[in-house]
Image (cartoon, rainbow, N blue to C red; front, side, top):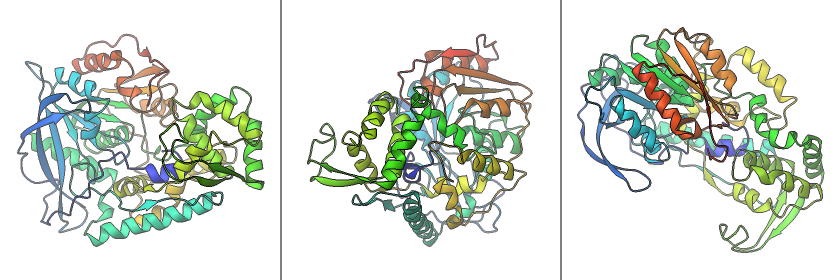
Length: 484
């Protein structure tokens, strides 16, 4: 997750924003209750293609550590295998945390879901607090920023903290036990799903945070999985990205020798903010609407804009020219994007924040983050979300949780060479604890969709792995033009 104010506002918004009401309470057993009752579900992807599927709801305790915890419901969408002799069910674990697995199946990753049916049933599990599960812990709070003075990290942190506290209070009033929304509970949910499916074992397929959930599940339930495929790897102690990883996106301009110029622009804007007058509708190629506006741009505004642009393949190449113009005091081209960043938007999902905060980071990693932040270009101070963890009221899972995972389950790790969100070093470290692990490297791939559908060869390697066939070349070239 990116460590500027856009992170705070976007975290968890990948989840389907449905404020589902609280479900009724009940007395749970150890993991969950009852078998799944699937009903026919006409699934339609984002391009209008329809395929048959089945939908069920799994009841699990909201907090297994609390006696008498109410039951919540997890949505389970199943695509039946096209194989004559299907292998173990493949359970897809979405990232975020807070993203909707079903929405991922509808989008760009749809071809991968369909192709993997050749190996077994493919199941999109809506994790607790997300998507079609009930409750969905989307925050109703929206945060925006005024345009007449430059933003500072402290101002953004203060507004986010107020909104986060309001969201936590909102869900507590509706009976949610936020202490139950952590990765260990989610791992136990997967075991409950395995039992409800009547499957001896399952295959775990996790992307980004879903890879961390997959690793934790392998450790917590050692016999649950026959195989695992984990892309965009996040180890137990990788919850909060390192400043050095965030700075990888800055290579676009540091490679051109523009680092000192960038720092100079930030310093100038901090001491002398620039006021830009934007005209009315059409000031952003027809995509921005509203009356004319006056926008005051300071150093933090510009830093956040550049960080976001460098993370967007469609805008990355424009940054050097925009930086050069900013050095001359010309910020007209950047201003509409900064204005858009000031607009009010949802802060995301309580599930996302509670889960990340419970996972935390080790003392050693915090020391490294502090050390790197002092030299960082894009992440010079601690991230806003982590600094607000106390408002969610969740307990840290402890140093034992953050120890490396050791597993004998055959596991395929997938990494992109240009992925600054989950850098390759994460997978290299995790691989040391996997006695039957393999590492597929996607040359030119950044975070997100390229890790799944960046090349048709990715799914073919996944199918080979699931069938126990040799993988051959473990390096695949991914076109750099692909968007995350």
